[in-house]
Image: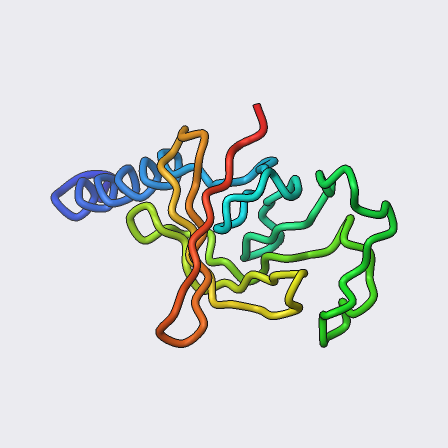
Length: 150
């Protein structure tokens, strides 16, 4: 019996092509993003989002506040990031790289000003220069819009 003959072979090929096209078509919100808080202040930082292993993570690569000290630290953090420099600090972790529609879930985001972590959802349309990040604390949430670095 030939490997691709018959109905079973064609169904297998169709399933493989469908899954492959979905994997190729879905892009990740990786790259450099300028952060803007939900309080209307100017740009806060540049964050590099990348895929590491099975998750998306985000690190601060540049603090944009010109009045901030270059050795600004996360003094309100309560975990291993306590008193670590903001530059290089991982603020996004555990995000599932497989979107549910256009939303990435199952991650957390750190607010270094408060030292608190929030459950995270990222909403991004492939190719869009903006994405929405929503941090949840119980039934409450905050939403920020970040812009891709051109």
